[in-house]
Length: 202
Image (cartoon, rainbow, N blue to C red; front, side, top):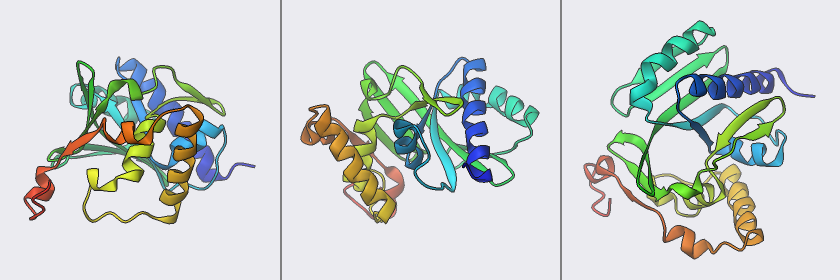
């Protein structure tokens, strides 16, 4: 039986998918919930939903109106270009996603931090999750950000849930005969935010 929190998150996934479509864009779920969506069921409780939206800055105002109409409170963190919505205890955070030719750019700290990866990693078709639909980041993306967390932050430490996810996506790559080395070789990052804090390698 689904918890109240999980039912809220399913409704949020539906709203994300529907509102993104009305705004002629796509929103991709990344992080903890991807494994659940790929397995077709909730594997654990999640505190929030993480996602990135194609051309977020161009569609943010319309998305904002539509989420407010559905009863969400909204906020935009200008410093990192993060759009946030919340209804009761269900929280969703949206980052920017931009695509140039064959390269996708996840602006995880706005203009202060970008992860570059092949656009083909993003799944073209939405996945069905209970009574909701959603686009997901893909197994290569999820493996890369777990196997090499330094792409995002020099201070991030893998949690137990991250370690479990890393094992899951490592197995998923193996089943699809995808080389982990080639995955890590296909992504890179640029993080002025961390350079300004003294991490020269960023």
